[in-house]
View 1 (cartoon, rainbow, N blue to C red):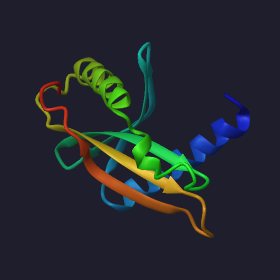
View 2 (cartoon, rainbow, N blue to C red):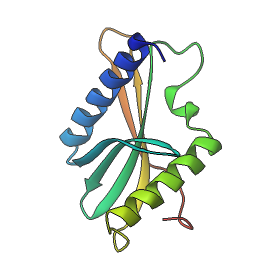
View 3 (tube, helix red, strand yellow):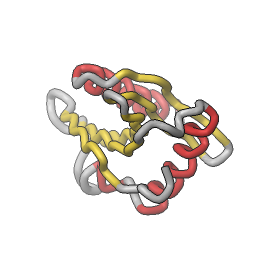
Length: 124
């Protein structure tokens, strides 16, 4: 991955964190990395632990950013979320998965938050 792409991703995550905090989320962790991949943001929304995938795009020629969270990515995030919950002793907490979509194709970035973007009730 190029340094430009890494910086772009970090900018997207920074914007996502600010938007989530504005909405009342508490950021617990960023870039939680394990052997199976990475969770962009782990947050708390009231009593709920929220695993957040951030998708940032410079344009819309390849579709909406949120559409990039495929079934494969959802399964990967679910496995990482189970790992996080177990390691942090949070098995008694409700959990959900949100997606933050950021488009930089206008003067100001357009940020959308999709709460409970996919269900993994059988996993977490």
